[in-house]
Length: 295
Image (cartoon, rainbow, N blue to C red; front, side):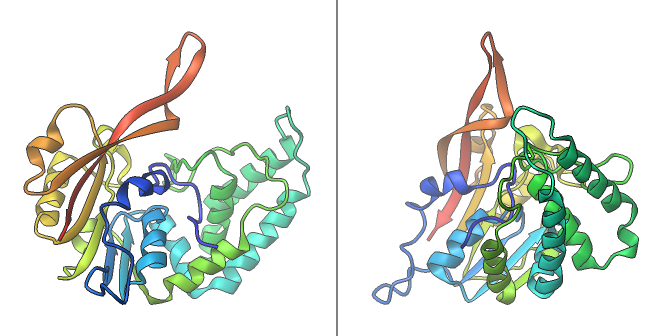
């Protein structure tokens, strides 16, 4: 089964329906020139686009990068240390599921277990193997709040509070993790800044999903309009490239898109970007921006 390993704020699952008409027709023996031979994604996150490309185009090579070392380690360990990784997640899942979910309560048993595991992830990781550490993080992300990756200000590690704690049968899907293990075997995985870790490949399809202009805050270092301008300069010289972002309604992308095409798509945010009304909170509507070449 192929889907992202975890929920990721800003993930592109909902946008795929808008992207598909722009992409070349999936690999065909009749039109072999209309395909994607190499895939490069320097802001990887949850990898929804990667899944679609791998399933439909089967590129000969792929390069993925993220600046978040905790996230990158999950992918590395699933690729290289699958058995140890899965064993640790199952161990945590079994302990967690001993506490029954009770609708309408704070589920103190599960809540306490989550908080204890997170505290151990902060305090004890130096004594752990990397697969054990990354599997622990994966468990926390699967039971944490709504795909939000917050960091603890004191130690800089994953610090998101627990989520709804409403899992009934399992915390993670074994088939999904196995799909990723298989898919990553021919993928080059790096961790760092996009400028350093984006290979220059002539026939590659580049998928850039950098931090949104109206929420640059958490790229790890700094990410601002100058970095986005540099990225657009790089993308403008590529034949197959997508640059995704969110429209801030200030005309910035129209002014700075170079020769790239521009498309906009409506999107509704159900978490993290809600607006308050007299009746409470409702989802906030916005527009995603796509700058692209597909020659």
